[in-house]
Length: 483
Image (cartoon, rainbow, N blue to C red; front, top):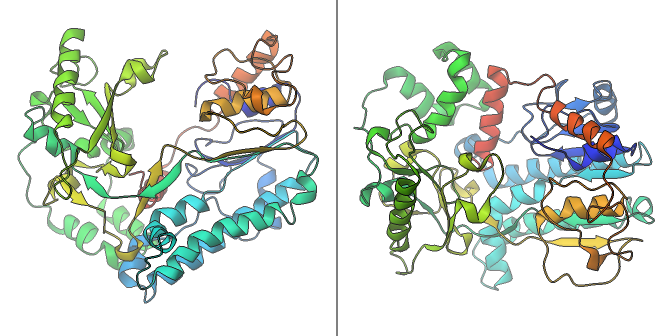
């Protein structure tokens, strides 16, 4: 996390701040109030909360509190007699933890800024989206009612809290509700690196065989053990030294690629392609800007011809060079080409080993967790609702996630942050762009330095994960579909 966060800025201006469950906030940064880390925290440890002394208060007030739900989807799918019912029960229990935690934090102080995240909506929709879509279309399949109601029930429960126990606290305050994405059907996984290999842009290493007892124990038997037992097995089997763990983890995504004969490759799910540039990777083969651009152009042409055999339509519908999307000092670390996959309903497979195990390049939706496999995935358009004494009735013609921080800062009368992208959504505010806000407001260098220092401390305060921490975060991100 680099740069100045909204809560660091507010803290530097003497505002009372509470931040709960925001991703990429581990370890918790010093704020003028309370911060509880989000899903990248391995557990509720001393680095997951600031100040540390609040950890005991949370445990005493909320005995069931946890950073994340600890659902083991693979184990439920393979061993539980009612995997869907048990999954719904556990997800609902964590939703209540989220509501209870926000309720407790609301009443702790007269906060100037309270930021809280519900992750439950995301978890339910990833799994049960297909049933909700069929119910809304009036064509349900057997079992859809329970699955769809799981999604609808999450929104009803949050709405109940907003209009019930929280209503008095919110009455004289500005409220902003937003989602970082929408949702829709997950139509298919795609083996993007295998497609690049077919197009002559990438070469795989010869397939390795063997693996012996370790492969058998960690592969064939893993579905029969819950997470805690699998951790013990891994300790018995041994691990690589700590200095190499992170690099090995990252390289596992592309471990089957022969980089000495590869010009471009894909990492992650969302159409991000990286040229194998000399100086950027140890085995880079592309040299100079003209060669880089030529490889990007060739990849664009090949991907434009990728069609789904089920309907004969192109899968890649829009292409972006990195300069169209990104700027700033980290530009060279950004993907050279970003491809928008049709309707955002297709996604790449993270690991090359899993790509090579598929029978087809476009291989259908994932099914590793049976009825608990993902059927829904993210969409570009989300929601934004503003309400309160600073807000006037309006329908916004357009808004972006990067507009949220400038708009909140403006409402709070905080000074301008030139490094922030986005704009103040002045058309939604009674006062428009207030003096001292992020459009044309006066900058206070001393306070900016304080805010920047507080933001930078987030990445250094007890930084680093233990081996056990890394394993827990990897498991959680994999269960959530990020890995």
